[in-house]
Image (cartoon, rainbow, N blue to C red; front, side, top):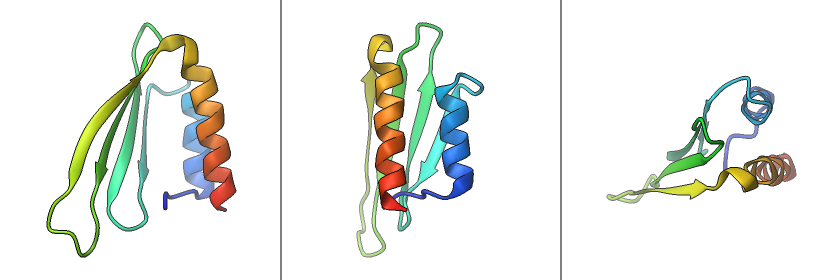
Length: 84
């Protein structure tokens, strides 16, 4: 589960509308997603997934190409709204 508070939704809206270039969303138990947009419109999504009972965590990154960035933000926002 991800933090889908009003503050997080506002930060996502700011990221989507290019007001900010970075966004961090926390998992409710342990971990985070970090989004960073570059000058070409690409979004780098870094993640860290852990758990209260896990002694290890997984980290990595995914790149969303610039032409898909707007759609990615809209669909991710819909996913977060669905959690509320």
